[in-house]
Image 1 (spheres, rainbow, N blue to C red):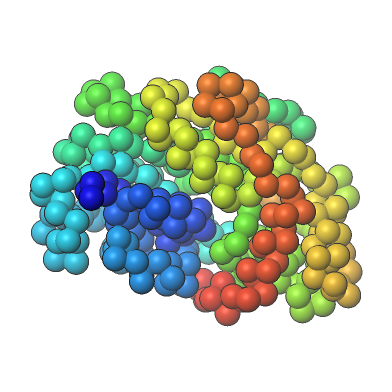
Image 2: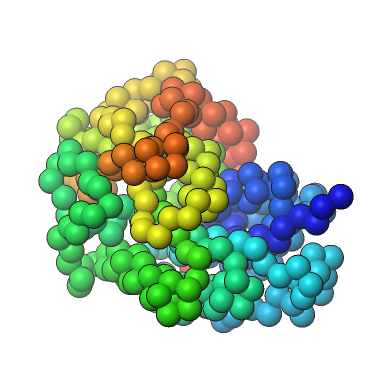
Length: 334
């Protein structure tokens, strides 16, 4: 039997990271590193039963010696190395954003450099999870291509995350040029699905949680507030497609379908048979209308498109949330 490749997923217990780990287990040994700063152990509990999955509870900004970690001996890293590194390690909490600002900056600088140094050491392929926030302020309803430069405020209240994502791309590009790292950058747009935290002041998971309890669904904005939504399994498949393809420049991954949040809320009420009502409140800073993805590049060059419909994706998310609500509501208070 052929030796499974060793794959490292940083931030692997998070929302997208945990789905990625599960998908990778089909043909790889997966080393998941996370410090649970904005995620829960429940996201990966079911994966721990697999002999091909190992979890390391660790803050990667402090570096990590994989070869001398006894828990990883069975993967024989000294012999077989690490073939792929996926970096999803970055705190993202609406509720605790202020408390995690320093952690956010360090993850996207020190932590990223540590990850890239591992890629250099093992000559591993590398994927950096970036974000649509790198495009800054855009016109309402505008679809952006990867060459869009945007208008950015480097000192905004959200800059530790937004500018961190931009600078992280610079670091990755620098390692490509200086050390010939086989790296890719995927700019991920708004994503939803099972395992979203329910108590972190994010509207979509709050919609589902409140609908299940017949509470009001609060939209921070008006009836015109729009967003694109891509189901998490589609995002994971996009990342895998990008990792297996030699792509030197950043690539957008997201859905081109745009929805009014009020319509999404109505759909959730329908799917949960809820008695909830929709109410509108003043828009919050985090609920800005972000750029919409032009996915021409990933569609034409890599053959990727999102395939999960909103109805199917919401149904899967509602079903998972109903069954695992206790796991998704761990305290994010720091």
